[in-house]
Length: 288
Length: 288
Image 1 (cartoon, each protein chain N blue to C red):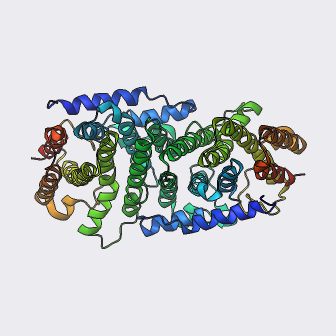
Image 2 (cartoon, rainbow over the protein chains, first blue to last red):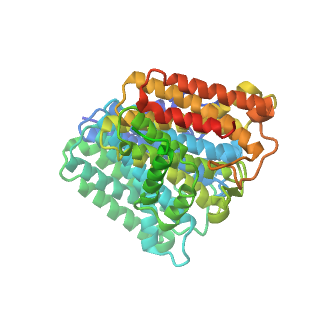
Image 3 (tube, one colour):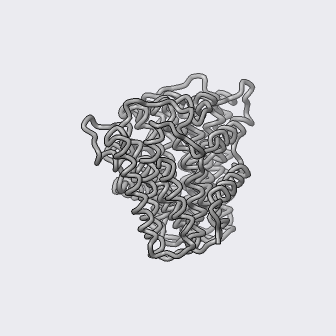
């Protein structure tokens, strides 16, 4: 059986794979800029969920390493592009200057494009073609305009009357889809059956919503502890979030509700899914 | 046997598939911006080469439609991002205002990100997983930092002493890789064997180089005829091209040389590869 320390174990496994990633054939500036953002730390939540999702479905963590790295590449690219002057215009991310501050806007855009594309090079290294193409579909749908990119599109054109429903849909796309896809890809890499994958999808979707609520709370309380994200990031005071809509208590309620739903989705699974259960509980503990 | 009109036939087939592409789940702004650039006309060279490459390897053109659409999506995204203020800062493309002029910079970046990601959604619709994952690898390697993105990275940081060798490598990445990948994916979709694919790769690589030389010449002579690209595009007078390096005659020599090498790569193939031969010859005729 796995232990409580798995998060750290999977995180280190993911970090090591990302550090060793060769970016074959990339010009030096290109691989430098991609590595700057890809190796800038962070929780590696998406990578860990891919590895943990694989183990929870009876697979070996290492079989999901390409999926874990691909999810982290997509996440890193999205941060680079979100930080651009034309988007959120952030100059700091995790206490470090953002990509466009260091490399200039053109190279930052290209570092994002490069990482986004590399995610699919990475997935195509999965030896079994059925698994590889299922992961490609899962990740591309979650990351594209039906998912993450669509969420950022919504965020950029926020209508004046945007309320709770708009926020839920925007956050589901912008944050939830990739977190859900990470769990799902992990299970696909384990060769999980349709029912298992359906449970993984549901777990991942609710975990993503819980994560967003927790993140919104920590953005205000500044309680970063050991999983901090927005540390050293410029703060947008006018942002519409669960906290600005429902207050800190309302957001905490949402986080608890979504965590409960995430756990419920796993109800049919045995102890091999304990890592996913612990991860959901650990996330909630950040604000409790 | 196919006829001389195949280019137009394949182009229309490709255009129709792109027009009908659903962009499922995309927010309205997102699909509007993606369609604006994707359906802005052009030669559809990459899409046509995928369809023609498939037929040349003994397959049916329709089997390569996802590959053709994916290649055109990648091409369209690259034009959107290349035109951005931080890159080439072009306000016109094919006589129409560029994406960021119409939709603003943020939505233009996202339209590019959306199209790039959608190319892989599109490839994952190929029913045979072996074919799908081979196409994903082919396209992602060609479009990413080892290929097209890497070429744009080089172009953006052009060193002061850049000469013929630098230019060849930059253009090979920036233009050649995607053209080559289109032919290669077409052949993969036909279930071609390794030797056939190797010939297709070689043909595509030389065709890409010939295309670039022809394009550089037409950029100066402005002779656009019926395959025009740069019509209505802002002109950069300081650009390093085959023409500025070797003059019009030198560039025409290069186009002829690369076309001959492209044809030579097909020497072992029968009349089913005639479309690829005619396409290479037709391209050269634009400047002869």
